[in-house]
Image 1: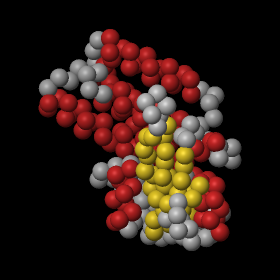
Image 2 (image 1 turned 90 degrees about the horizontal axis):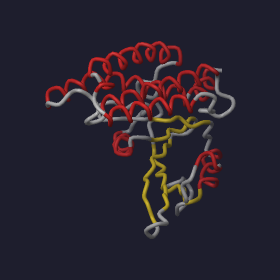
Image 3 (image 1 turned 90 degrees about the vertical axis):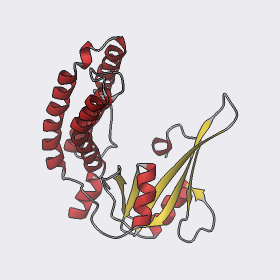
Length: 235
């Protein structure tokens, strides 16, 4: 359970069927299992890209606002987090309320297979590198150089780090690590002030060039996180 909540102080689940009030995460997961839930799928939607969602519109709208959600496998429910901070200055902690809502039982939107994701990521990494080169990020001053150093440190520190729980296929680990690298490159290239683009039109061109790369990275992350559930369903 500690691996799920991280350093957050409180996780509660509101709207669990049969529970009139919010309950703790452990009890909520037990209730969902009793309802028939056999796995949890991650969704990482963005405006214009309902990645991993299956509807209905009410659930999709809340998931898009949060930019993340969990869709249950085996029962027509999903969870959307609402994150807030509480506590006095100097002792602020994070609280998360998960809203349990009905979902449509349908295939999640736009989630590739691991094989597709790996092939797409290889091309996306080349595209992101080309964009960085074209924008001359490395020659854009000390702020950009510091960002590049931070990216390299993250990439180096991730080697040998367990990015997925035991039991995931090795390909899922490779795909997730590569997706995170691509995502970091996109953040670096798209950060205001880090590239050579200075005009509004140049910044818009940069965003347009990076958008498909960022989309590919998010699709690959969802494919990696959900691979265990998908393999179990296929089996």
